[in-house]
Length: 301
Image (tube, rainbow, N blue to C red; front, side, top):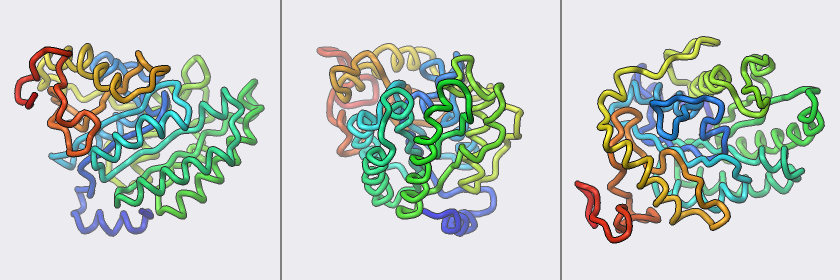
């Protein structure tokens, strides 16, 4: 969807409302939120996607959010593991990011990566959902990363072309000047810091044309009211049992032990036990308890 079309939809919804009700994020550590630790968030991480979801939830009472991103994933792994579950969740807003690990660590060919993500974006946009794409940041001539600058730039140009063809909304981090500052980056110089994640969240909401309360260079703390609504036993159960179980069903063997922090769409705050599952979801109809154990309260076995 183009920004112009989104603006028309926003007007139709009212000045303080946006048209989205279910947001799903796909990707790697960048989308999972590495570099933005938050003990009160699922998985102990917050990140730009969580920050975006928090703002979108403010003006949409029935808003739900899932984050399928897993650190270290290459683009093909993202497509193999996350694409089908994302489609089964039937989102109307999808953030798609991937390929950075291929370029940084595997000398990935940006032309071949573009072919893969082009097909995936076509599938996602074909559902009628609004798709967000992210052009990578400019590391300039910094040691190590300066050597891959050309490949990142080529990949970004492909992403702009793909976005235009599939009417996606582009969030161009290459053109985000504040990301040139060292404070925007984790000490590892690869992942965003909390301030960096905040800046990407601001850029995302601005690209969507959504009114929000985020201010440049002033990260908003996690709203205190939200997690007081969550039952501690549900959170412990979800983190220790449910999430690892679900991902074990979805991940190839080489990725076992890694888990998406929010595999099911749920309210941004007051998260309880996930489910019920939508028709077609890989775990729909299965007992989400441990093998041989009863189904959680409120869900069918």
